[in-house]
Length: 598
Image (cartoon, rainbow, N blue to C red; front, side, top):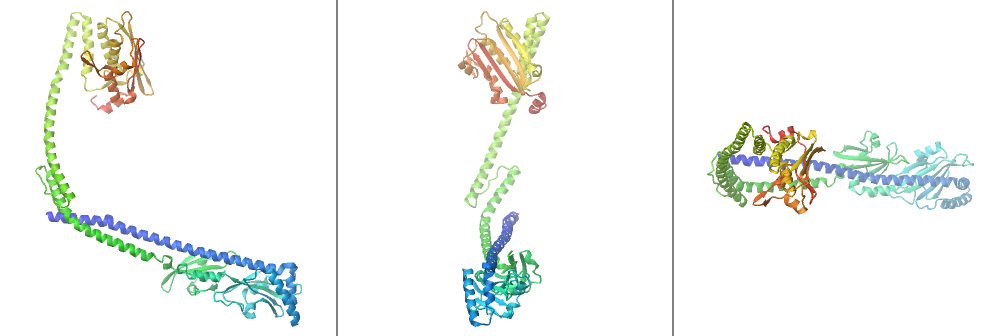
């Protein structure tokens, strides 16, 4: 039985471990790796797009530059260069040589700087050609059949652009040379001699070298230049083979697509040059976008699995040292639950567990002691309740005795004695009423009237009292016997030095902002600040404790807090004014707070 419970505890532990720790951690790792992979892929794609933006900027600026140069070359000095070029269309060698030199000087002057200009060519309508700088190595038939050449012939006086992915002159034959050609076919308004068919400028572009440098980085892929119809213009690293399997080039407008080629997934990114409408397309293996991701993920998984293995070994080792002691404590608690307090578990296992076992044994002993003490306390409480019930007989005896005295006085026509007994009965009945700490202000005033009747007999009508109580105040609840000590203080202490004058007491009550304000003012001898402080503290006067104002103030603080403390204003020989602030409590609220038996 014990072995089965231990096995269930161990299985429960490992199930909880795998459910709450292993599985969530693995799930977090999988989700995180997916997010990291996406972030790496997007970051690499943005890097490639930035390189394409650089290529677009270079190509666009170069096309604009060569177009402006060609226009300047053609239109400068009122078409003087075209007129000079037309004069080279002659078979007279010396004359052709002379005009070619003049044309070359004009070219060098107009094309400063000329380092990136490979050649300038004037193609004549009769088949002759005039070359400035280097000679073009491309066959004339190939040039005249090129799309840019034909487009310029159709749209005269407009610059047209063409491209070559190879060296076109005798001076530069680098395999990475990319050449831009700008061509213009002058109309009759520009070439009044009608000799020139085409003016062409060939310029070396930096785009080829930039693409070569970018292609050296595997994560930047292979970049190609395509015209606006999707035909390859420049392919340095053989990327066109990856495009040959693309059935539809409509994806260029979206900027990105993905496709498998030869069993590998490639991502294609594209950016269009707004000037030439050409496309820069980069094909990059998907793995290159997150090139170190797989290695990092494998390392993370390996470390995680190793940590799980260590934790498993750690758990297995310590489970053997904690299950047995804990089970002993559990068995002991089960016996305690069944009512046996004679349980004692043997300390075993780690130090902390031994401490726990000692604490359990101490707890059982302490519980046994507390139960015994509680039994004794309940016994004493029972005895006290019996004494309290017995003590209730005495107040009732006093009230009944006063009732008998009042009856005899009434029969004997001693009305004063009967009223005194009735007034004292009211005060005693209020004092012995233990089931309620509050009653209405009207009830408090009724009790106060009885007290004042007795005091007037004692002091031979030596004082008067005036009530100014608003009607809505009479149903407000106040603590029991809260006014009697205040009025008694005014009579006993305030009027103690009055000889010829009559003492006056003014009692007012009103409600302001849900606060019952009761003020008791007298014209007695008044008090100093020191006397006010002493009056609010319990003190022994003539061998007995005086608790009048102190008792009232304490009850107000306990019931309503600091805001309800007695406010005493007094000056010697000018009288005293005492203010009570009591939150308005109706009968329903007081019933909810104190229970239905109030």
